[in-house]
Amino acid sequence: MAFEIPTPPLLGKKVLVCGIANEHSIAYGCAAAFRELGADLAITYVGDKGRTYVEPLAQKLEAPIFMPLDVANPGDMEAVFARIESEWGRLDVVVHSIAWAPKGDLQGGLLDCSAEGFAKAMDISCHSFVRMARLAAPLMKEGGTLLTMSYYGANKVVANYNVMGPVKAALEASARYLAYELGPRGIRVHAISPGPLKTRAASGLKDFDLLLTEAAQRAPLGELVDIMDVGFTCAFLATPYARRLSGETLYVDGGVNIMA
Image (tube, rainbow, N blue to C red; front, side):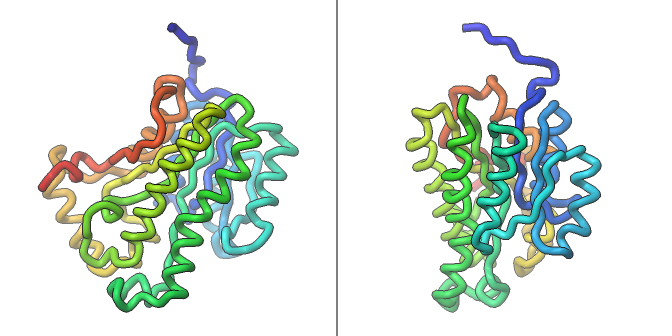
């Protein structure tokens, strides 16, 4: 069956992007890609320091909604979705690019990870996506797309990824179960698995520069991906061109994941 897609293909779509820390963030690449394809953006930030870096980016992308969101703070998430409902009355896409673990638990091995640190990492990096989906679904009255960011270390052991491996594995499983539960409402859910990128979050991993170098050497395409590669993949998944895709973990890594 044929369908018409406006030019630009996401013209007028309402998109919430969470997790921008600065111009190097994967979430910023997603926001920029969605805006380039015509979407209207709601952008969040964490704390006063975060606002300093994110507000100029939100202004550059002409985001009419710009709000604080710390998923560990009760009420923050509800306030964001209440504002979206009040101003837009609907929501088409959510990009969840949020991950955190206590530094001591992140840089130590899994055996040494504290129960408190594991629980905190799971709540912020994984369960926040479930909570976000619960709030987004009623606003996706004509269907929509939920996207979250994973990593290869969810499925294979990556040295020094430590506690985030099990956490991202749980996130990918959550995306599949949400795809199943929300499918009848026309809501599609995906986990995106980018290759290594120089982001602030990644800088907390031990020997991350070595990981970048190895990825570039192993990639069949011979180079690393960038945040816009990830962003345009997410944007594609929100178009009618991807209307029959859901529950996938999509690798955006130049092919590194296929290599032994």
